[in-house]
Amino acid sequence: MADDFIIEMLNITKEFPGIKANDNVTLQLRRGEIHVLLGENGAGKSTLMSILFGLYQPTSGTIRMNGKEVHINDPNDANDLNIGMVHQHFKLVECFSVLDNIILGVEPAKGLFLEKKEARDRVMALSDKYGLKVDPDALISDITVGMQQRTEILKMLYRDNDVLIFDEPTAVLTPQESGELLKIMKNFAREGKSILFITHKLNEIMEIADRCTILRKGKCIGTVDIRNTTKEALSRMMVGRDVSFSVEKKPAQSGEIVLKVEHMTVPGKVHGKYAVRDLSFQVRHGEIVCIAGVDGNGQSELVQALTGLEKISAGKVIFAGKDITNASIRKKSGAGMSHIPEDRHKHGLVLDYTLEQNMVLQRYREPEFQKAGFVRKRAVRAYSDRLIGLYDVRSGQGSSTIVRSMSGGNQQKAVIAREIDKDPELLVAVQPTRGLDIGAIEHIHSQLVAQRDSGKAVLLVSLEMDEVMDVSDRILVMYEGELVGQFDPGHVTVDELGLYMAGAKRDAVREEY
Image (cartoon, rainbow, N blue to C red):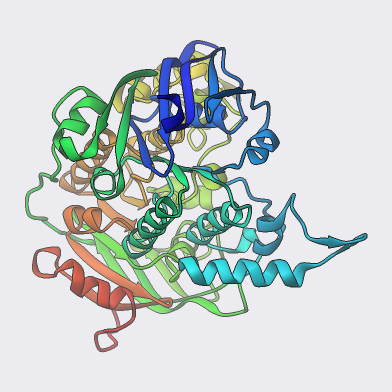
């Protein structure tokens, strides 16, 4: 009966130039259930949820709420219907504080004056209740991606919505934070809230979901009851083939030192603290070294200092035998360093450029792509088309697609394709599989291992414990800006790593890891 469903999206079709993002999709959400939307990158999941939240209008189809047809013309309509959404790419005002972002649009006021104390108390109460730790006074531009995610979730909780849409909410959270968020979702469902949850993580689906709807290339493949299915069955429905859940690799054959960091110190952006403190380590040819740690312990600042996005206040960076501490980003790139950044929108792509322009962002000056100061468009197009094919980057209009219009996962694949194809001596990969489906993760992991096996060096920064354990040859744990331990993934447990990541254990201080 229709009364069983709080939301019904019936025969929804959404067309963009060159692509049918949703093709006659029907999704029904029961009251008090956790319903997962599963599918490959670009399968149409975020588009479908954006239609429910009023960001897009369907080409055809109807939406019903509690059995009655509704028209959701914009997010204000969605909020009026008590529908809230945490977006995959955060919708936050960078120059505002955390608190200002949470209350934006529903500011408590007396006359012409804002009454922030009451709002602050409520936000901090929600933060404590659900374990979503934030600094209400920090600017969005200064905080980690993980804290931005928590800000988005608090923004939705503050509005007391009944239908909660989470688009890849655990993509930037640590395993501990993800576990807490899943508990929070279960509590929401017990309180009678209804949850639509987009994720690629099959373990999360098996742990938390009541039902799962699978999309593939814009079409609905089916809806299954989680009690009657397996991870293998879900992955087959999602990608249309069997997927390997393990990383195949031979033992590392490490060689000469490629990267040597000596006593690096990097200032933090919040409260005047140092984000990285007197840190030393090295990475060799033919190995994958992983920096593991809870988000916000200096990993972001370390990578930004290495790649030239931030200045360091003390220490040295030696790359291929040369001091590149103060070298420009272009010089570091030209010397053989590639960087898959944590935030693909801010540091990885020019969103209003085409896909082919983004593919040659760092290489357009090379003779292959320019002659006498003019870009060789055919060469750029051919190069971009080759990478699109190699990495299965899906877009409506191929190389000429504006990157902003692509799905988050396909934007990520474009960045990875560009950075790996430069054939770097050192690949710095930060959360490279964030937001990718299991088929794409399998491909990217094999590419990282292939880089290592060809004698290159890989510095991986990851919050995914499975990735840390399966892909790394050496694990360095960071806590409060310092390295607190070094491990062989074959001789350490996830629980042991967790103690070091939480600061409960640490090795004696070493000059260099």
